[in-house]
Amino acid sequence: MAYSPVPLAVTGGIAEGKSTVLQMLADNGWRTLSADQVAAEVRSRPEVQRDLPRALGLPSLDDRVALREVLATEPTLRRALNLQLHQLIWDEILAREPEAVEVPLLVETALTGWCERIWVVTCRPSEQRRRLLERLGDERAVDQLLHAQLPTRAKCAFADAVIRTNSPIDSVREIVERLADSARNDLLNRPSPLS
Image 1 (cartoon, helix red, strand yellow):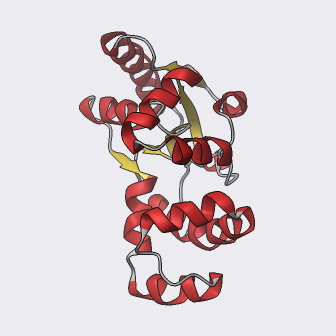
Image 2 (cartoon, rainbow, N blue to C red):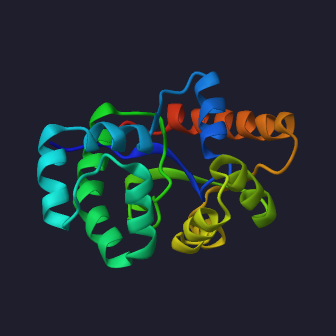
């Protein structure tokens, strides 16, 4: 089946505000989707639960904390898991035809060509660390996650817009609404592929 590209992808590092920006788009009437949500659904499929751990030499995919620990310390295993899962997840995303999708690993998985526009959401590294520590409560886990990820500054090279979330929330919302209106107008005014 042939799929159309996603009109807008929202990406960035962990705890930098991607979900907040995606929710602002949803509040503006965009059909949104989270790749993490789709990933959870794909991982819960019986065939994935049965076959993937066996192929990777893992006991199961159920224990998220243990899985995160293994993936943070074993890059070869992380790459193998990503190769197995990302195609299934992306196919499901495209089949649902969202207008905007939050994809944390968009650049890392070389999916930028499947998106018409890319917004990179970022904040100061100190703010990212503070948010992540508040979320996880474990400095070691924070260090592992931040060390395992591509720095957001590297993702900015792929951005049509960079949204900084260390500003007040009303300021971020104003920026998102302005960018969303512009993107919506561009989408409505683009030529039909049949014309």
